[in-house]
Amino acid sequence: MTEAGLRSYSVKPVQEQQDTAFVHVYYNAEKLESYLVINSSGFKSLELTVFNVLGKKVYSYKDGPIYGNYFTTVLMNDLPNGVYIFKIKTDNKTYYRRMLRSE
Image (tube, rainbow, N blue to C red; front, side, top):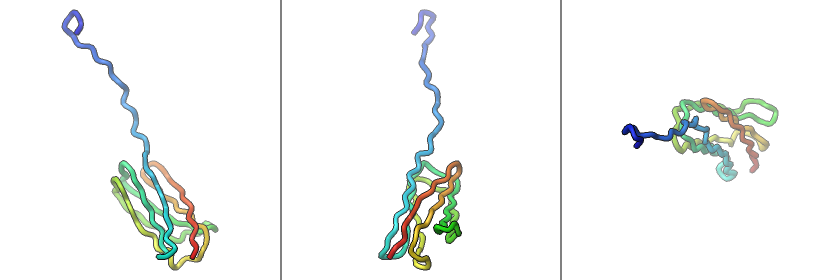
């Protein structure tokens, strides 16, 4: 307390929340499917698009809202072996992950 009876406090600035999402894509060759796993603080929306190596869209999916751990399966049994690009678009960021499909 100060002499006048007033208290003084130190104030820390509020920091803007950082995007702390962890985005992983796993391929299960035995079941011919991929798994998209996201751990985040939350998104209002999520848009997943999968492209082949030539840039052709082969799969798309929308979901939301997303909070905490999120898991979805992408069936790959109708697609040929090759490299696929997963584009994961959230409220404020876009993530890209590569996946190799092989039997």
